[in-house]
Image 1 (tube, rainbow, N blue to C red):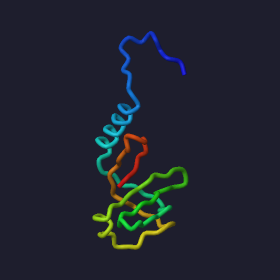
Image 2: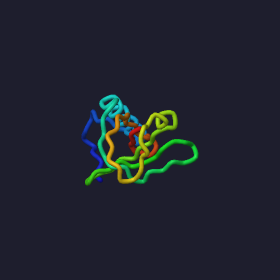
Image 3: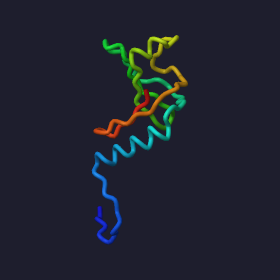
Image 4: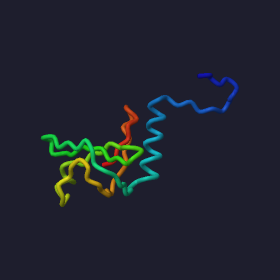
Length: 101
């Protein structure tokens, strides 16, 4: 990758700053959103939280539903079930992974 040397007003980000900026942009632009997909990789550990992947034919996103929220779900989730969820989007700054919860 070439390093530009003739751009006097360029802004240089550290990796942490880039991830923080992307997180802030996504979380402020998409504060609450509907996502439709099929549940896969559903896990219910002893913590009471639920972890799963929502997917469609072209992409997937990791999801977490915490214990205080999943007690209000009125169906039994499982792999292969199509769902429509109202969610917040989050980005983990250290890993740049994004998820909905």
